Length: 109
Image (cartoon, rainbow, N blue to C red; front, side, top):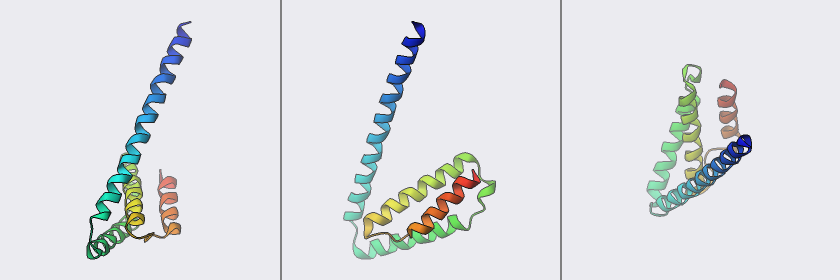
């Protein structure tokens, strides 16, 4: 009986945690779109160049010396930059390059 009660409590706890996490993801996308909507064309071009240079920095990094948390932060940063670049005017970071970067990060973990 206790096992069922604990299992039910665990399932309930995990299901509410997942729903909350997904809600926060959708709010982040709206914030990026609003930020991009308020930019001028020159600001958009400048931001795209900043994103490109940051991606090149990450590509050239020696990720073998990074901790697990730092690698995780890099992946999150790349994903957010990809969303922002896509929201500006399209995909400036090629999909193939992004897949290679993510695969390299996964392999190095």
